[in-house]
Image (cartoon, rainbow, N blue to C red; front, side, top):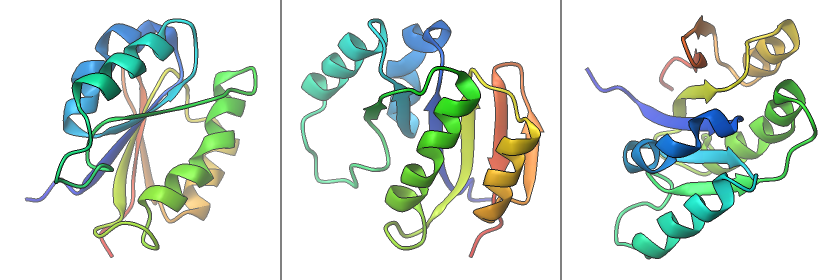
Length: 132
């Protein structure tokens, strides 16, 4: 079964050491911190533009709002803009979140984007949208 188009959102320095590994198999949106910025720079340098879809792997860094929940809520619409049905075929169907919990507000935000299932994980949670 096709696992669908996966994206990771990393909201904690706790996962900085695994960013490179995560960015090989899916595009990562990582909170910009003193630990994640140099890793992102190395990923960009090591993987110059290639012939494949740049949204299938690699990394984007973003500025935070001060808490994991606020950081996540501030970026999820941008992730949808870049990886959703209007920009990517197939659209993102799995978003793995590292470093944040699926609070009620977070669940509502994902639900409004069509993610009908949220499962907690050891590192945060994953949100699933049925294929279009």
